[in-house]
Image (cartoon, rainbow, N blue to C red):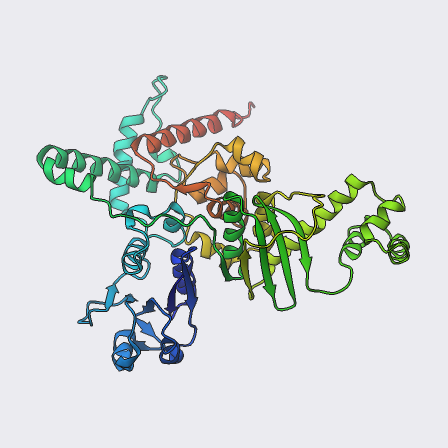
Length: 478
């Protein structure tokens, strides 16, 4: 296991770097106090150091120059700031949110993966700058599009492009795309050899991926959700031990599905949960507890013996209780989790096999606040997205309502996240949580619309305007 130490002036940036670099072969630690950097490096277990240029009002490069050279400072990435003369072990990245540069250089230094293998998830976990277009560029494209689409429906009636509201940015983007495509064609015609080298860069040998998911990590919603997804997708069997300040829970897995859960809290948890959900009364709980003591059986068996549940019904209640307890782990903002693939469930009974996709979705929807969503998605409103599976397949896997399916219907089109949110009448938080679930579970990726997608949207907006105009009442007759 390789170890990366991150110390940043901006705590949000530090968390984004951690989410970008952390994997099953690399653990990322955030050091919140720069004054402790000397002491922490003295432990000599850091393989890569990541610093922001500004640390507590001081230049990180100058700070590194004062550290005792006997500490053997590891290779270091410094994020932000202008050019500077640095030692060989320091690698300066001027743009602190240049995801590709951070991932590529860190990967080369850690010798784990190459830039060619950067996952869609890694590219989406940090906000990437989007090109801005001036008003003049938008106006020029607006005029071009007006001529192109005037009378497109064949009725001879010209609909001005300016009547289609909210498309200035789209027009500018369309114009930019057409220009880029023309430049690419010219490059292909005159620089064939050069283009060939760029189109087929040599691939570095890559270490084979580990078959195991994230073995351990700090307990926060995004990391925990990712660990559950990897256990599910890789069909892992073992015990996931979740340590929180007030409780340690052990979640036993079989082929990626939770089948048993234990708690460090003494006493009965099931009976209290059944009463809280209104499945039994306090009196029935007392009768069940009394019978369990008298007969020397578990409370569940006593409740079944008393006729309060059938075996099948009780299994469902056990599963619901276990699911609720796992979802509660998403509320933690401190603690840790660790996977032990050598442990097996303590009982052969399998009254339930829980749906991990539903657990992840419930956990994110109930407990992911704005900082967590920003950690997973970054600045997402202006981004375009595409699904890796059909909407019907996703709806069969993850719980979602009609508005969320309508939102997903804008994938692969010239509608960014904000556009899709408004058209589907979702709130921003609802859209962000849905995208966070799909991003964590590797069901979506970034998408760059082409000329055709933008032209299709312009036509859609023109039809929408015409439909709206035709639905308006005519002038009142006197």
